Length: 591
Image (cartoon, rainbow, N blue to C red; front, top):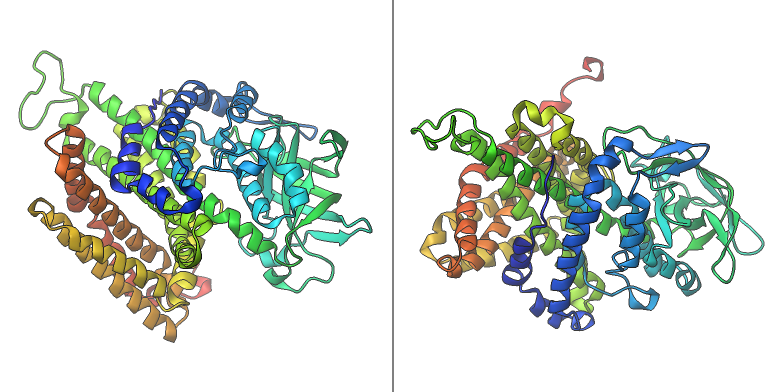
C-alpha cells in the first residue's frame, strides 16, 4: 500500500531559506500582509486534511471509479463528504480575491498546498482545481455582475466549475471548433455543440456546475481570432442565488480511462443552452490563457506529487525488504538477507527520483514567484514577471510531468514484481500520473510552444534574460565545497545558450528545425533549470551543514544530481544538434 507524509520540512526550506519568501512578499505591496505564521498553520492543516481524509480515498476511489447512469455521475464513496470538508475549510478560495470570499494568498503559498493535494489524490484534486481555474479566468475577464453572483459560490464549494475547450475533431487546434453561440434578445446566448474530455463536467459533489465554454458567434472571423468565452451553468439560477430550471447542458457519457478513474471525464452536449459572454467578443483565448498558465503549473505539480508518493513508498519498501547480500560483505548478519538499500542500482533509482523531486519543488516555487509578480506586481516588475511566466510555463508543465512519470516508473521498479500488483499502489501511481503529460496541452505541444513562440519568435530574448540571471547565481558560488556544482552549472548554462543560437539560426533556413528540436531542447532547458535550483539549494544549505543532517544531506544529493543525473542533458543536446533532416528524410509511405 502506498504511503504519504507531506514533505513540510523541505517545503519550508524552499519557502524560507532558498527563496526568502517573507522578504519577497514584503517587496510586493499587494502581498505585504501575508503572514508567515498563518502560512505555517495552513501547511500543517493541509497536511492533516490530505493525509487523513483525502489520501485514504485514493485507492478506494480508483477501485470504484466515477459511475455514469442516465446522464448522472456518481463519485466514489467518501468524495462528496471530503469535497464538502475541503470547501468548508476555505481551501478552494485560498488564493482567491477576498471580495469574493477568498483568502487572497499568493501562488507561492498555494503551490505547496496544491502539491500536497495532488500527492494525496489526483482524481479528487481535479474537482476543486478546475473550479479554481475557471473562477480565475472569470475574475479577470467577466463582468462584476457575473463575478459577484457566481464566484463566492465556487470558492465556497457550493458550486463547481469546468473549462470546456476540446471537441471531437479539434484538440490543440482550437481555431476549428464548431460550437456556436447565437445572440438572444435578452443579452444571453444560445450555446450549441459538443465538447469532449471535460474534467468534472458532471458529478454529485456540488449543487451546480458552472461551465466556461469556448464557442464562435455566427459572424466570427475564421480561426482562433473568432473564439469567444461563455458562462453556461448546469442549472439556471434565480436572482437570490437559488437554483431554477435545468439548463440544456448535459453529459452524454464519461470516458473509461487508464487512470484518474475517480475523476469524471465527460462528453458534454450543449443544445441551445443559455450562456453569458465573458470578456469581449472574439477574445476568448485571452481569457482562457489566464487560467492555463496556472493550470499548466498544476499539471507539472501533479507529476511531482505522484513522484513524491512513489519515492516515499519505494524508499520504505527498500528499507524493509530483505533481498540478497551486499557486494562488499554482509551488512545485517542477524538477518537472513540485507535490505534492498545495499544494492547500488536500487539506490540509483531512489536517489534519481528524489533529486528530481526536490529540484521540481524548488522550480515550482520559483515559477510561482513570477506568477505572483505578474499578477500583483506593478509596472516593469509585472511585465518582467509575465515574460518569465511565458518562458517557464511550458517547461514547468512538461518537464515536471515527464520526470514525475519517470520517477513513478523507477519507484515501481524498486518493488520488483510487487510493483505490478495493485495492492502496493505503485501501478495506480503510474496510471494516474500518465495523463499529466497529455492534458492541458500535451508535452510535445508545450515543447513546440517553448521553442517556437518563446525562443525563436523573439530571437531568444526571454532565454537571454534567464541565462543572465543564472550566471549571476553561478558567480556567487565561490565556496570550495561547491566548485564541482558550479562548474557543472556553468557548463549547462553555456550549453543551453549555445543550443538556443543553433536552433534560431537553423530555423531561419528550415522551419522544421523548430519542432524537430523542441522536446529535446525543452529537456535541456529543464535540466539547466534544475541545476539552477540545486545551486540555490546548495548555497542555502552550505552554512548550516554542520548543524543538521538535513542540510548535509541536501549538499550530498546535489553532488549526486551533478554526477549521475545532469549528464543526461548532453544526450538531449546532441539530439538537438542532429537537426530535422534525420527524421524528415523519410517519405510518408515509409510509415
